[in-house]
View 1 (cartoon, rainbow, N blue to C red):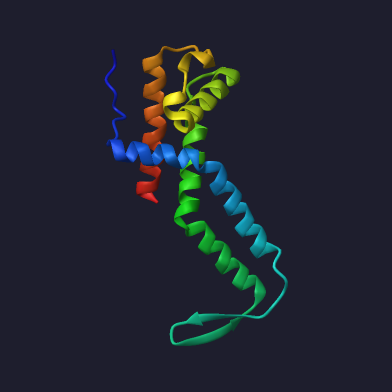
View 2: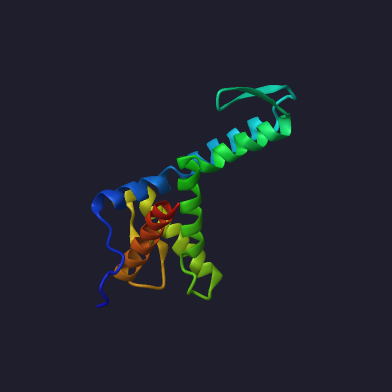
Length: 147
């Protein structure tokens, strides 16, 4: 039996699983914030810059606000989950099997103890599945550590 090289501390594993559970909410909030900025009515804005206020044009202001959203921790979490999902099963040739695995891993993170491995009919054993899930959670943690 191969050893699990994707061992995370329990608190990190729990945090990464909760990021997956909150992913849809993060996407919704991200889109809402972006839409609010992009659809805002034209107005002159003032931004505090070292020592005083400077008037900025709307495109510059929108750019600054969009950059602020992109660097927010919630956006980093959202991007980490997205990137990790993209890499699930990247060694599996069959697209349907890869999609079933993605769904099973994300559902496992969301449903926690209610998750039933057998319901997904995956072409792998339970220990291989959980190794892949741990790899997924490790990838989220590593992405957040780097960014």
